[in-house]
Amino acid sequence: MSALRIATWNINSVRLRLPLLADLDAALRPDVLCLQETKCPDELFPHEGIRALGFEHVMARGMKGYNGVAVLSRIPFTARANDPDWCMKGDCRHVGVTLALPSGPLDLHNFYVPAGGDIPDREANPKFAHKLDLIAEATAWFAQQAPLRRSVLVGDLNIAPLEHDVWSHKQLLDVVSHTPIEVEALQGWMRAGDWHDALRHFVPAEQKLYTWWSYRAKDWEAADRGRRLDHVWVSQDLRGALARHEILKPARGWEKASDHVPVMVEMTL
Image 1 (cartoon, rainbow, N blue to C red):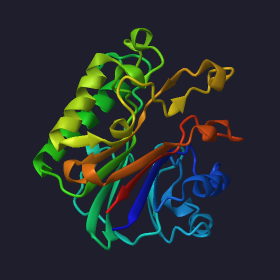
Image 2 (cartoon, helix red, strand yellow):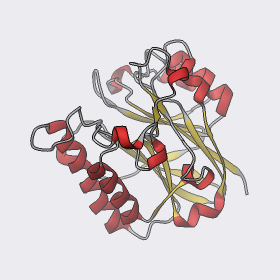
Image 3 (cartoon, rainbow, N blue to C red):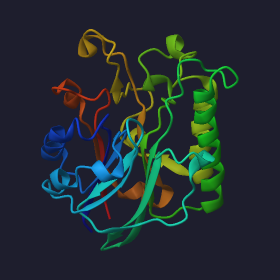
Image 4 (tube, rainbow, N blue to C red):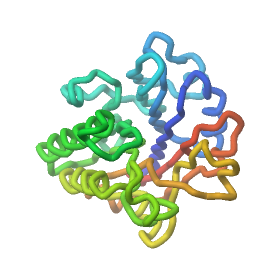
């Protein structure tokens, strides 16, 4: 049995914030780091700087200016074959790999779900429609894969599903990321894959839990108006392997910080 640490972070530009990866690595020492919103086409991905941190195995799927996902790993992996191109948009919102662990292969999915714009109405807002459509496709696809075994799903899912995943449930009910239709969609996705919420495994649902603080806040720390937009889910057979978690809140105060902070889950496998 050995420890496996998987971290996820919406880095909000991998080239701009490459120096912060060293700080993340020093704080969390992840075996695998999943990034979202890399905003970097594949040919410009900073492989050299990332390998200098010890991540020898890298898979990036990116485009210029926005979106983009990547898996950085100290553990060898193979790319998952035949995963969908969600909504047939080719917009670099998912990458899947199979980690070659001593205890056996483990499937890892890294998602960046659309933020969905400002208007929670599919007819008036194509970005919101895209968000709901991607989740609907993922829900149906994972339902077909069930029952999942030795699987982990991480990423910026851009939905805070529970009452205490946001600073004010009442005030955010009509704000994109916490509307009832989004919450229902995300919970349907979880049920379809029979996923277990690894962060809430450690933090009871009645406690506040955030991973994102807006750039708009004058003093994000004093206001503490956060949301839990970043998630780690594990298949039911891995529930007993969950050992600990860490949300690296100090990262929100780093120079040139992302508005998201790194999230890590450690398992004993």
